[in-house]
Length: 341
Ligand code: PLP
Ligand code: COI
Image 1 (cartoon, protein in one colour):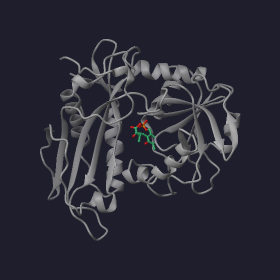
Image 2 (cartoon, protein in one colour):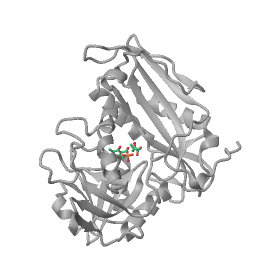
Image 3 (cartoon, protein in one colour):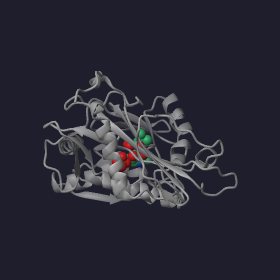
């Protein structure tokens, strides 16, 4: 298989159509066979649930080329199960989890020429998603749904890759208590668009959201969870029922404990404690670990001791270990890596 002629090392995080995508339809209470198609267009009712009431959810995972040249995906079973949680919360039909993983595998295999070669720094981003395709005008769940998976080769989510970024404390809330912050609903991202534009206009790469109820605790950003490293070398990460349970963060907690022998605390993180931290990073599939150098709270600057030049030393170790596992340089815990045959 010959790879596409793409300048892999200079890819940014944007959409570039690839050969094939997966489509399955839910109608009359059941899923059809599903399969691959070359057609990148979606035709739905003008009154589709997704268009009227934003009934949609999605996932994000990546395919990597390992050091030995195999194509692998990272913990797809966790994405399948998180999407099932999203569907249940949004009154959408669950796409069976084993079929979900198989749909992802089929789509990656069909686009193998777009999986960036080892060592380029790029990866193939995989976007499974589902939406209400049947018409609804009263507020209720749609009667028909479409599940799709496409792929797109990507580079770093933040310009500059591993360079520390500056973020700001947002005046907007991301998720309400007992709301939808813990699932990957499209509506969570729609409502964050104004907040991210305001942040960008003010020169910040991302928003730090605080908990909506008290505005005293750190939640997450628009597209990643937080990790902090304390001055005595512990990994601390916010625990909250209104943040997305990041698979990267859960993996890093394991890596920190089991590979690096670190202490790990998942707990409420008061914003007041952030100025005491040694390092801060944003973690997620797209973000990998993006180091944060500075957090600005309405003009008041918190400068992390790790600085603005490079990631802090502990963040670097976590980054190298996680990407080492993903790229096959380090042995993975059982079940973390799925090889695309
Ligand atoms: N938090 C939000 C709001 C996200 O959109 C994402 C991205 O998926 C994450 C966290 C990170 O989750 P994961 O590590 O599973 O990609
Ligand atoms: C991901 O990391 O996969 C995300 O979904 C984050 C962002 C692109 C929304």
